[in-house]
Image 1 (cartoon, helix red, strand yellow):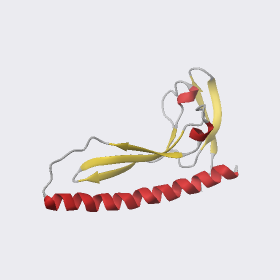
Image 2: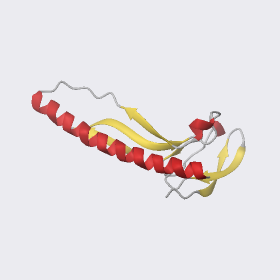
Image 3: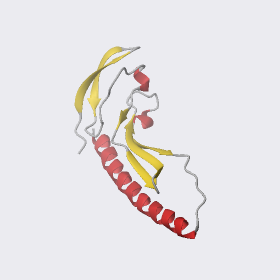
Image 4: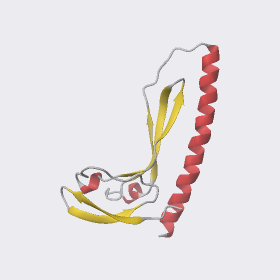
Length: 122
C-alpha cells in the first residue's frame, strides 16, 4: 500500500542523507534545513464550505524527531480561521457540509490505520 523507495536529500547539519520515502509522500523540493525538521507530507485534503476552506489535512511523518511515537505516520490537521454569520438555511448547509467532511476524515483515519499497521510489521 505505501511502498517506500530510497531518496537522498541534503541537510544543513548532516550533509547528504539517504532514507526511505513513503509511497504516499508528494516529494521534497528545495533545501531540507536541519535533519530533525525533515517531514514527509502527503496530498493535501481541503474541507470547504461556501467557497471557504474550513480544514486542511494531510498524511505526515517526521522520521528524525526524538520521540519514537511521533516518527509514526500521522494525520496533520489544520483548522482555518473561517468565521461567518449565518441564517438558519446556511447553518443547516454548514452542518451538512461538516457531516460530509467527517465522513472524509473517517476515511483518512482508516487509511492512516492501515499505514500504521504496515509500519508496525516492519
